Image (tube, rainbow, N blue to C red; front, side):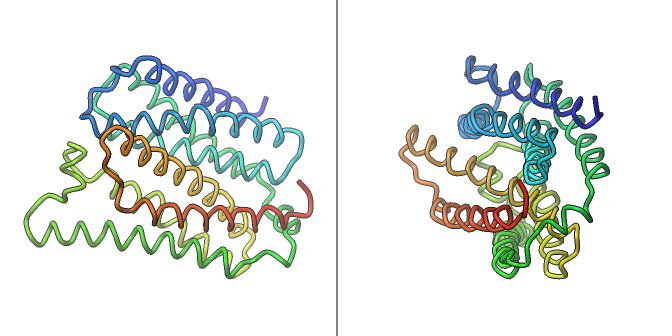
Length: 263
């Protein structure tokens, strides 16, 4: 069995355990009430959406589907991005070592997966009708808005010598969300967009991977916002923005995948 498949099945097993156990035992998290809601929303999306999509795309990839290979790589990227939050942002709990394993396996799966991807062959399968300008605009828009929000909030707090309210709400000692988004989300969005504009082979591949991750995590934000509203009657002020961006990302992803000559 290929190394990428071995690590993928390990990710699936560890992800099922680390998301199912907290759902069955809501007291497993040691964070404040707000962050517990965030973890619960993450666990729901991971267990009931991303694990099935991950498994299906892995199986389809092994049967030779190029589209599902890209979706599978996007799911791996989701697992890495998602569990980095748990690994560095969750108060220590009994699932800690599972977070370590998922992040480690995801890193190696991406390495082997990208290494074994025939970028030139997949590039030739994309039709000339790919809506490149629309896709790039959406990726730049998402990356730009997130950058503007997090950098503005950070600069305001730095200049005033205070802690951003968003950090105070989480109870974290630092801005975990700002840090991870500005390193693991924003740069891939911009770099993929630039490569896609140049019609570089890796631009097509990385754009699909990033869009799969971006859309899946936008669902996490929406689910968390709805759960928060249900429990606290407090509506996330950026809910409308996340909804619009998630739709744009989804349309971009569809625009990329439907213009692959073979599935």
